Image (cartoon, rainbow, N blue to C red; front, side, top):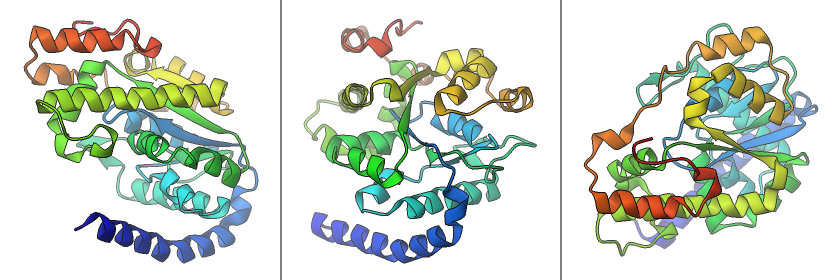
Length: 290
């Protein structure tokens, strides 16, 4: 499919979704009257977004869509009620499907995934797509802020860069080449370039958002899920009950998955990544062997 044809197909898809989202948003608009925060994730593929997003969605005052790409609809000028309707419908559908993704279950028994008591926080956990759209269409940030009419807060999930890069290289065909171009000596070099291009988007977002972005280190989160989830909830304006935190902690993996161990690394590649890590304060203390 040519670039023009692909663009036309995407526009047609959005045009088809628009009226249903409009009707659903109008029908459900009273559900969205008390929303205080829009939550988006930003960052890198396979960073633990699915886990943390599902834990936030389990809170009785939050709805977080799974891989919706909310900024796509904001860029297409969908309104507040439409965006909220799409996020809620996505959360309900993911819950109904069992909340299984990439071989893992993210269901939290006895909690509020796909439903809520009083909705105060709504959003989407698709961090990679959010980063890509902020890079390619930065005007989408003020657009969603205006559409939602509430503060937009970003969750930046960080994990060891070598793990992210190993996973990106494994799925190299899925990356958005517009961020880095196609002139790279190897799939490893392309994966490294892609990862740090996403880091640059985070730097841009931090300059724009100030205190409305929170770093969540995956390894720290896995080691102390109740404390870290409580911190995240308070950042979003949510009060976490002990029962909620305990239920969420039960589904957290006992240790982070080390994707870097599943591929070969030479000293030159390790050192090249280490030099680039030094340029990003939020990557401090990460190393290949750490």
